[in-house]
Structure formats: structure tokens, C-alpha cells
Image 1 (cartoon, rainbow, N blue to C red):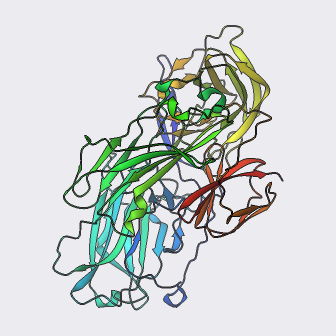
Image 2 (image 1 turned 45 degrees about the vertical axis):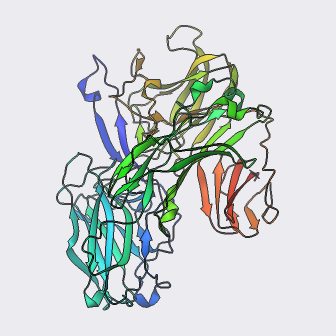
Image 3 (image 1 turned 120 degrees about the vertical axis):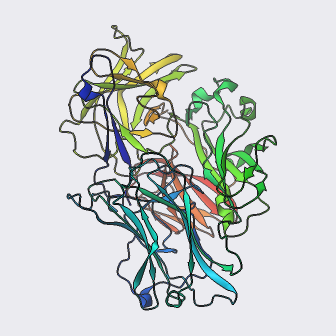
Amino acid sequence: MRLKVWLTIIFVTLVGIQATRAQIIVKPISPVSYSNSSQIQGRTLAQLADTTVLPFWDDFSTSSIAPNPAKWNLSDGVYVNGNMAQNPPSFNVISFDGLDSNGTPYDSESTIRLLDILESQAIDLSQIPSGETAVFSFYFQRTGYGEKPEAKDSLRVLLKSINDEWVRNDDLVLTGTGSRDIEPFQRINFPITHPDLLHEGFQLRFENYGNPTGGFDTWHLDYILVDTYDLNITDWESITDHAISRQPTSIFKRYTNIPFDQFFSYSDSIFTNPEFVLYSLFSGQNNVTYLLSVTDTLMNSQLFEVPQNPNQLPLEGINDYKSYSIKGLNMGLFSGLENRDSLFLESKISYLSSNNQPPYLINDTSRMYLNIHETLSYDDGSAEYAGGLNQSGGEIAIQYTLPTQDTLTHVDIYFPRFLPVPTNKTLDLIIYDNLSGETGSTLRRTEIFMSSSDAINRFTRYELSRPVVLPQGDFFISLKQATNDYIPYGLDKNTNNWDRIFFKPDETWIQNTAEQVSGSFMIRAIFADNDYEVLASSSLDESIHIYPNPANQIINIKGDFDHLLLIDLSGQILIESTDSQINVSQLRNGIYLLKINSKGKVITQKLVINH
């Protein structure tokens, strides 16, 4: 599947600049083949996979990009993500809009039509116990951070009857409002009582109808559930679950990744109190108990674990959600690690519940990976928008600050795919000491070629013509374009470093304001040592064997494991799999991390790819 991003084109608002430049334009992303999910269409009841027994439940918290095929027979055009909805019941939602599975608009005509489809596997409703009824429920949100559905747009739910026909019920047809206001998630409850629906091949089918010309008319779904309830219960709102709604923020005040050679020059002020959002799905007042743990994943050693602050407020019943803050770290926790060349940290929030029951426990833990190696970055690795200029000679600069001297070798940039493609893709990558414009302020200038990303949130690495030795203090990474076409850069809206963004649409640099652009551009400073060697885990379980390493085309994982992630050194998850054989032929040469979940433990191993 492809990256479905709703794009904001940003023009800098300056005194004296024509009003036509002072505007924000929202457009869908361009076509790009990000699809990696198998789509199965047009199957009859007899051709479905094994029937799912109750409860049928998916909150998408363990899915990435595409929904779980063990639960969903068809996922055409939908997109699992953790960034486009606001305050969902659980982390990750599935989103619907006007783009197909390859990111291409369904049609060039704006006539309302069928767009994305999500269809479940067969669910067995033939054995409902006496005195109980089956109930189907889900949460939905219009718009979120996407584009609003108008009153003529709709999201519809169809139910598969015993006659192999899709049945529509007016109670399961949602329409747009046209409002730009951010509305909270709402829950729909639908008792399944008609005899024609109580069969072993029952299915759910979600369809959205809207504008097929781009990423418009956005809907988000979460927490889809089919289960049985006592007939005497008339209120099916309450589900015995708390869920983490938003992953923890960074342990660092500004940055998401810090170079190792700079890390120990910072004071405790670099750290901040991480925050996360917890959502309650059942009634009553519920005390909140949780832990933050930080683990060095390469050495499998825990650096930090702290319980809740007991003074924070409890959750107050159904659909209540609150943000919780946790005591920050300090440099003393990293004492004795100064002789390493890297730290790969897992920041984990674990909500501790005495009320939760399977299968709802899986959304009680959320993880964020932080790399202390070679990257200095503000963004979290995920773009919700794209931002840029459309003026020849225009520049965008990002300000960074070093606590000690270091050598800048590369710059990583995320260019999301976008139409129309600029006619001139040549850019000047410039490193400034300051933005005064005085002679000597330019430290390095390198001509680069804009390379649109070939995968979701994947950076392109650009090597400077010569490395730049930077002293302690500020420096600026600038990109200057030679075209009036729009040049898009990934914009992360979940980390807000607006004051580190500068624009130069003519001859004058202007510091950005929060009203103009909020977020962080996905432009990263890289301080790469040519002779570095990342340490491998010293505690790799002998029952797990990874070969060959270095790898060329295929890697094999021998031994029992549940799940693995392949992550690059920027923290981006590139492959998520349960297979024992992984194709890495499409990955660039370099060092990666394999995180293998085996018997309740997470094993981390360095992987070198060399084609």
C-alpha cells in the first residue's frame, strides 16, 4: 500500500508579498506504488478462509499500513496509520479517502462514486447462545487531520446475508457534515437480530462514497467489534478496556535522534517529560497505573523504569481520554556508556490494568524507538503533510544547534511524491553558519537532484561535496530551488519545532511563526563516521540464528519467533513480518537492525546489507 498523506502547500506570508502567495492549498499526494498487500476480490462464501469465531475484534494497533489479512478478506484503498486521526480510542486507525491502493485518484471526474473498501473474513454467527444477542460496533471520525466529507459524501456498512447478498441498513449509513471542526470519535452499536444474518458466513463490508479525484472526504475507523451480549443489557457502550491512544512523545525536549558523539555533551536540560494519551472505553472512574521504561535494545539492558505519578487524574468513564506526563530522564542514567559508539533505545509505555481481558491487552503497550548514533533530527519519521515553496530562488532553512564540535557529512531529506512533478528537480543544498548573508556565512554548497521517495516516509541521503567541520553553536541546512514549481518536503505535524524553520522567498530571511507552519520538516543532519562499527547484541538467544550476515538478497531466521521488525538507523520500520525468510534485495547497502520477538523477549541484532 502507499503513503496516503493529505498535503498542505505552504506559501510564506510576508509583508509586501502579493496576496496570491499568502495562501494554503490542500492537495492529495501523487501516484506511487507503495502496495505490498495482497488484495482478494470477488470471493463467495465458499471461497473464504476459515471462519472467525466470536469475538471478532480489530483496533489496528498491531497493523502497519495494511490491515491484518487474517481478519480482513479485502482491503482496497484503505490505509492503517497512527497520525491522521485525532484522539482515537486506540493507537492506529484505518482511513478511507479518494485514492486507490497505489495512491492514484480513482477518477479525473469529481462525480460522487464508490471509493475504498474494507471487507472482513467470514464471522460465525450461527451459534449464538440462548438469551444473548450479537452486536456489531465501531468507532468513527470524520476528517481528523484529513479533508472533510461533505453532506453528499457517505460511509456505508453492508452485511452479508445467508443468501450471499450484501444488505444495507440505513442505521449504518453515515454522511458528511462539511464542517471543518474536529469532532471526537463516535461509536455506532448495531444489534444483529435478523435470521438471515445469523449464519456462519456473515461478513462486514465498509465502503466510502465521495470525490474520486484525490485525498478528499476522509473517514477514520477504529475498534471494530462483533460479540454477543446478554439480551437484558440495553447499553452496549461499555467495553472492559483502556487503550493507549497516542504513542509516547520523545524523551528529548527538542530532538528525536541525537548523534552519539554529541550526546554526552548535553546537560539534563535536553530531556523532557514524555507524554501519552490514554482512552477509556468503559464506565466508572478508573485509576491510571502505568510504567515508562527505556531499554538499550542492542545490549538488552534496561536503563530506566518509573511508575505513574499518583497525583494525575483518573479516567472518568466511557470515551474519556487524558494526556499523562511521566518524569523525565537524566544523563546520570547513561553513566558508563561513554565508550560505546551508539545507543539504540526503546521507549515503552505499559499501561497496567486489572480490568482488561483478552484480546484487549494488546493495546496496553506502545513503543517508540530513538537512535543515539549519527542522526540529529526533530521529526518522528512520519509525515502527515508536505510543505514547501513555489518560487524560483526560494529557500527553506532548518536551524540546528551543536553542544560540541562535530563533522557534518550528509543530509537526509524526505521528498513525498507529488503531482505535478517539478520540471526542474535540481536544488542547492547549502550549509550556513548564520543567515546574515555576509561573506563567509556559507560553509558548503552542493548541487543535488530531488529524488521522490520510493516508499512510505523513506529518506533520501545526500552526501556533501566535502564534510563540514562545525563548531559548537548554531548551523543551518538550507534548500534553494531554481523553479517556480512546488517542491514538497515531508512535514511532521506531531513534533512542533516551528521556530527552527526559516523562509527566504526573495532577498530576506524570515523566521517562521506557529501561525504560518506548525510542525517539523523532515530534513535531518547526519554526522557519519566512515569507520564506525555498531555493536551487536551480546545476548542474542542461541535458539535464534540469522544468516547470511552480511546479506545480499535473502536473510533467513532459524528458530522459533513470533514477529520481527527490520529498522534502519533513522528508526524507520522497513519490514514487518512473521516469515522466516525475508527479501532485502530492495534495501540500500548499509547497517540495519533486526528486532525479533521470541518467547516474550525482544532480541536485537545488527544486520549488514551489501549487494
